[in-house]
Image (cartoon, rainbow, N blue to C red; front, side, top):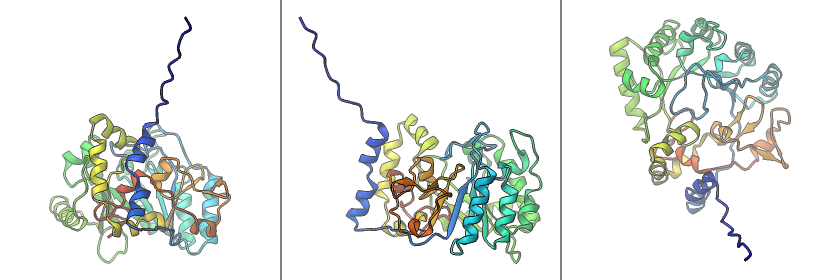
Length: 345
């Protein structure tokens, strides 16, 4: 007898199932919302995935084991883009710990010379820990930031040790407080200095963040009462359901529950303020994305059938591009919204 071959249906990748189930483009269409780019005010560069921490919620999957770094040629090309496009007013440096890129200091100094507003996504503890690979000290950073008038944006999950260490690792809170006090000594966060120190709050777990205004009041009261700390603003950011955090949700069987929270909290007003409308994101290898989250999902900006990079950069084509959305975008549009600058409404 001839053997009968049973053809099994090809398994659909889980990511595609998730995208179909939580369809952000459909949500926009149902609300008759169109979100074209408005301009490019900010060039955000992820210059390294190397980090001295390994945080549970990190969408970059950064850690001391990562080796990706932006090279000097690419750094110089980014500076050329900033120089030749006056409408790009901000340089936003992120990582990993951006300070661990060997060309970090050079990039900050040169961008400052171009009269660009430089922001650094600073995890605080790198000042204390230094470079986990080379052992190079980073104790000079608070003074360096003050000299170059950098806006420091620092992660601080909570004003209590337990919750911060739970998310970012044992001992992180204590080191963070030590680093903040060093920044305060340089004038950061103090009235009348114009040296900005802003904190970033992410919920510890699969929750939507509370009111940014209320949390900022609590942070300022508690940090000043316990440590004498001062800062300017608290940016509340929703944990994005991608990479390390998504894997954690899947392990706990909480992914669908979290996504349904985000979908139910979809806010059309928050959608209008999504950061991808006024920002582009650059990876360590020079590729261009609509935002940092799309970068981590490798959703390249494709124009004229080829990926846009810093080496074929075209401002006019970028401001007329079609932004790529995915299910993770519900994280930016839930409740009061979420962006690199906190709530969008």
